[in-house]
Length: 208
Image (tube, rainbow, N blue to C red; front, side, top):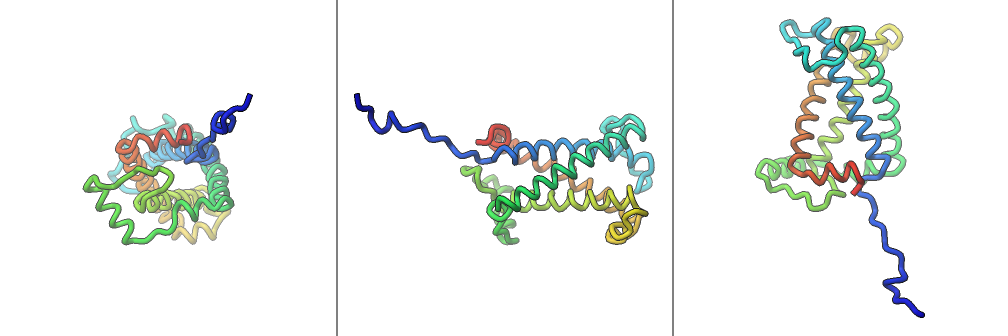
């Protein structure tokens, strides 16, 4: 008995908007970044960069300086290796070119204006708008600066070139704090974007 072509043909599987490696590295990077930020605030309080500016203890991680350092170093290695894998896969697969470029200032300003007026569309979650492209590239660069300035603080003698690149030990602490502050601001903006488009969260969980 013959079957129709539609019945016999296997059901086509939809291609994932976010492949598994993107989702896994995204959540690991997010975990590492949050732990680094919360423990970093506790470390900062032990020797503030800016006099009079102290982070509330209730939003820090580690309990005491030694505990905060342990959390910080553990998250640092997670971010370092997971981040390297993420960057390598983006380059090898060509995702960084297809997802984040082309990108220009006019497109960013246009999409930002549309977003502020509530007119920015998100019908196709497989494509990033200019604001998303800029934000994601920005946070990648910010995390790189965080790692480099952290190395300049942690291993200042062993890595003099990195220390010099960061403007010296004392200035590296300022750079590290400012980069951390920008990361916190990105997380807030990112959460707002997710709240406005909840489907984007589902794609980062189930892939589509």
